[in-house]
Length: 222
Length: 222
DNA sequence: ACGGAACCGTAACGTACGGTACTGTTCCGA
DNA sequence: TCGGAACAGTACCGTACGTTACGGTTCCGT
Image 1 (cartoon, chains in turn purple, green, brown, blue):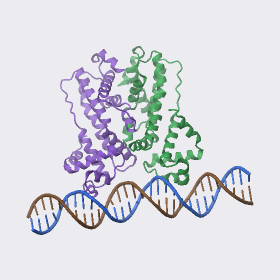
Image 2: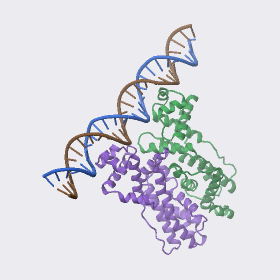
Image 3: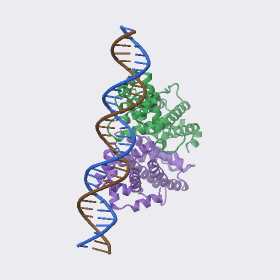
Image 4: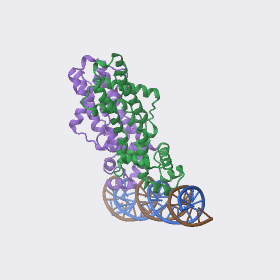
């Protein structure tokens, strides 16, 4: 979500401060939960006092890190040019592949683990931030494509949100929960492309208008 | 998974010890992460020394709790009697509804959060235990039904595992990650039934043999 | 009845960590 | 050149919690 507060904070950060957030991300990925203020200060070569001056407290530092990382993922503006069945399928595949790359990246895994841990306690809103910039952000980005497909007579659904949730399930399946729980699941680039194409074709089999779903895609669904 | 070690440990626990594990589950659900040994001892009306004597250390206590809870979910043996299109659909719906109930229950949410937090550190294997008794256990339980459906000529797929993963995605969609991240998503009984039916029909639309997929189900897919 | 094992309640210890205070150094503008 | 702001480095404080130790009590077998 293009939350103004998010952007404002991101803009206000100096390169030195961004380097600190990089250190936080690095520690999160490598050390898991040993994310102490002292470790951050050591890694970023700054003093703990500076950390507290810049970010207030530990939660402020984590929040800034999550928001900054989220702002980096916000790339990829799939422009809706002339839309036909093939370009729609292609856009869906690009969305799915991009999403799979994100959720299988070590950074995303570490970030979601941290946010889920924090969601257990009531204080702080890391879970909400991750949700807004992950699940809901991609939903908003995909919606225009779905509605354009419907207006072009290529897709058939009542509610874009419901349709998106089916797409989400077909793409993600069990990948995210398995990775979060520590399963040694490895997704190579070709696997991501293959899974993305399969998910897109399955989605089209469910929501594509029959006349636009070539029979040759059917085998890919299995 | 019917891991012998799991069962052996479950059998060996006295009612008094199971009451302690109940206290742990209760604290996990209510207090989130404030799961201290002192709090467990207070709630279970036992001494901390007894906790350490019975379970070794904190990780042992948590592991025993997870394994015990997992053993309780292992219910529901969908017997494969004469299988026709309707009974297959019904069994799929029962699986989906049961699964949705489990993952949306406070206990499951708290348990998965704990396991994910632990998966961040390398020590202990709570994540693996939850995976084995959650994701993979239900996969093993559903596989016979899928293969029976294929043998009966009702389903069409190459790999049962791949087919199951699609089913998993269609059922779970974004529910689990949203709940884990603290989203205030509420699933009523009727919503679970409706979502389960929709997921089953979508799965049949993808993997059911055409002659067995009545046209009247199509509207439910949207 | 007696002895010992199991167990409760609690105090105590060690450690890890969030947060604060202080000192010395660097750097920049006047 | 001078003065002060910004910051690194470190010592320090308070607290929370895992773990251990110990005195007192209950319960069970003999």
